[in-house]
Amino acid sequence: MIQLPIRNIAIIAHVDHGKTTLVDQLLRQCGTFHENQELQERVMDSNDLERERGITILSKNASVMYKGVRINIVDTPGHADFGGQVERVLGTVDGVLLVVDAFEGPMAQTRFVTSKALAMGLSIMVVVNKIDRDGCQPHVALDKVFDLFCELNATPEQLDFKHIFASGRKGTCRREMTDPDSNLIPMLDMVLEAIPVPLGDQNAPALLQIASLDFSGFLGRLAVGRVKQGTFKPGMNLSQSKKEGGFKNARIQKILRYEGIVPGPVDEATPGDIILIAGLESFDIGDTLCATTNQVDLPRIHIDPPTISMTFTVNTSPLAGKGGGKFLTGTHLQDRLERAAMADPALHVEKGDGASAYIVSGRGVLHLTILIENMRRELYEFTIGAPQVIYKRDEHGKLLEPMETFKVEVPQEFSGSVIEELGRRKGEMRDMVQDNNRVNLEYLMPSRGLIGIRSILLSLTKGYAVTQSLFYGYEAYKGDIPARVNGVLIAKDPGETTGYALWKLEERGYMIVPPGVEVYPGMIIGEHNRNVDIIVAVAKAKHLTNMRASGSDENMTLTPHRRLSLEESVAFINDDECVEVTPNALRIRKAELDEHKRRVAARITEE
Figure 1 (cartoon, rainbow, N blue to C red):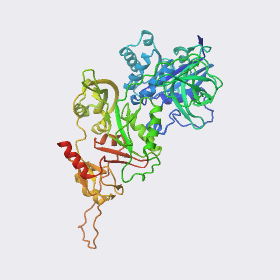
Figure 2: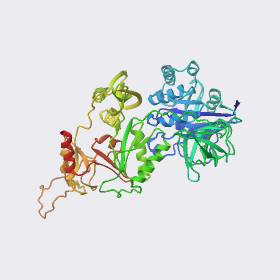
Figure 3: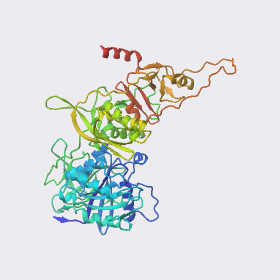
């Protein structure tokens, strides 16, 4: 076995605990960028959605050189819905930098990823970040990390973890809180001490497992993985394992390795290197590349199963093709969904009922809505149905449903209404802790009870609720959970909404469309304040006459409409409704646009 001057680390943390900012500073202080190079913040968050939402969605690679050692860094998502990304990349590293907020300590998503890392036997180094925040308690956060490790059955070696205190925003750190601030060099020294070197014999038969993929406009799809043993070179002939079993021939066209945040070509790769391989005709994540003389099929990467599914279909509304979409057909939709499933093993795509219907399953509503938003921006136009929980049955035929641990922190004055709402959604309270004027609640909730819950809690608490959730497992079905109680206001005729018509309808409920928007029969324009759907005329204009008298005309003041985001639209719809997704607009409609057919279907259901 040959020890190589390489360290492979993954940086894991809860959402918004500052790991991507910390990576920025590591790259800067190691001289990855030119002194006068102009850079935007969070260079690792290259996706537009990541920048807008301030979260990491896709795992990414980078590398820095320090004291002659190449440190490969993998920036991982912090949200549990993207756990499929985390589970893949942990197999390519030897250690983990666990970043926790000095004010909040470890959170739910921290627990999820840390449990995966501990189970794989990885060395963990703790970075207590944001020590420059007012009111932070770095040592309390560190004690919480130790308690978390104990709960997750860490080994004695893992409990004896190294730690450091840092401010990613300032680019400073200190080994103890009493030490003066310095740059991030002590952190890099600690990485060399705490993270083991990769082991592997470069003279052994070549072996690598594909853990991720990348894309190049010049080279096409690139397989990403860590060399376990042997030496990989451009032009090599290899054997590639197939998902259904057996092997096929493969040839490497080009090998790239990250230099900073940009991959560059290399002549060879040895054990411990994380590389990108170009030239493979087709591949799946989890395929093994091995020497033709020593065929090895490594165990497939385990990914937790999806818990939520949604139906994607082509857009069949009267306004189809008028929303700025370029890709409208079932073939376009199928190709795009298949590409998404190849890139993300946590995403499952299967054929649904109908010529162009596909059931897409993922780890949560956020997981699926990120895919939907990306497709919108790529000029796809399609329709999505209401999210459905994926049920299972045990060996006795008993119905099981996915459950999640749900934690919410609220001001004490709002705790009563929050407890009432969570109880209505079949939540079981596990813990309740009061800290000054804040109440921390922990619940075991059905996954279906969490659909749309965040916006509701923000409304109940005037924006003060802080929520986090984590997949728990499957338990017995908890019973019916009330869906949206109120009915909807449905457009009667095609045309443009008028301020006069919407003003006349305000006493019926609230609107989700403004004046001047094109509508069609069956399109939903608002929520009714009663529990029945009604058909309304929203394109009706005020009749004009030449008679005017002082005070006889009504003063028309229109209440602003409620603009629903994609996540809010998905949470709003019931099973007989869907969301029309176009690049320019989101429209909510009845799945069946014909009023007569809806009435017949409702009568059959009642009978």
